[in-house]
Length: 167
Image (cartoon, rainbow, N blue to C red; front, side, top):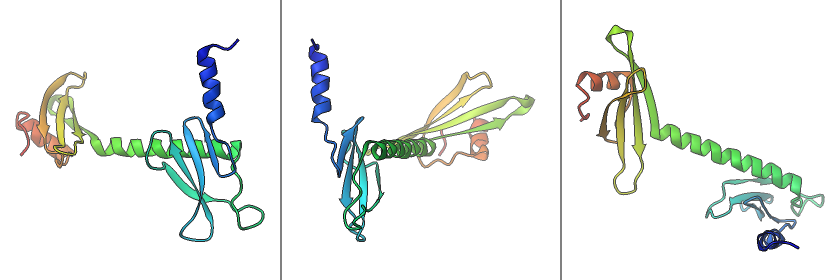
C-alpha cells in the first residue's frame, strides 16, 4: 500500500507531459517551437516557476526535413545539463559584477584585502567597502556608491584616508 506522499508523487510524475514537442521532468520543461527567423525549429528550456526560458537553441529537423525531431529522454537530459550550465555561468557573471576584491601591500609587508560588494536594489542600489587584515579580521567597513571603481590604487587611497567614505 502506497502512502499519501508516494501517491502524490506518482500523480505528479503521471501529470508530467512527455511528448514529441513538449517534455517535462526534473523541474524543467523543453518545448520545441517554430523558429520565426528561418524555416527551422528551436527548443526552449524553461525552469519550473521561471517566466523566461533559460536556454533557447536550434533544434534538429526530422527525417522528413519539415518537422522537428521528436524529443526523447536522452535529448532532454542533455538539454537540462546545458541549461543548468547556462544558469550557473549567469550566476557566476552576476557575482563577478557585484563582488570585487583586491590586496594592498602595506608597510611592514602585511597586506590588506579590500572587498567591494554591490547590493542591487531597484530604488537605491548601494555598495559596501570592507577591509580585512591578513588574518581575516575586519578593519573597517563603509558604504560607498555602486559606481565606485575598486582597484589597488583606489583601495590604497581609501586605506591611507583612514577608511573614510570615498567621495
